[in-house]
Amino acid sequence: MAVKKEKYPKIKIKLKKSIIGRTEKQRAIVRGLGLRKINSEVERESSPEILGMVKKIDFMLDVSEVGK
Image 1 (cartoon, rainbow, N blue to C red):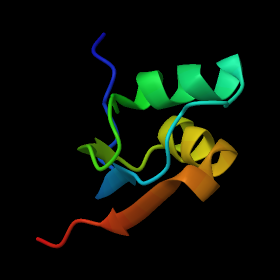
Image 2: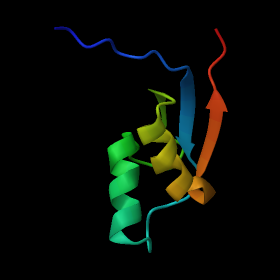
Image 3: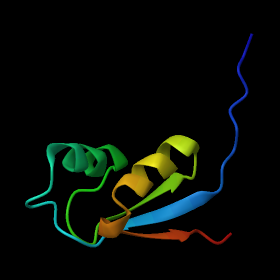
Image 4: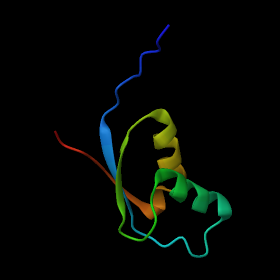
């Protein structure tokens, strides 16, 4: 039996602050989102998992919805 994958809208996530001096947990979240350097951007689906990661480090990020 195949499991249906839900389709979530896309969001653009941009790292605006350095990870220097941050906790190991915050660094792991940044890496888990796929961000590397300041001003790097990624597009991710706005699933509950991704939104939870973004909420933990929202002061370091710029988040915007991707228009279609």
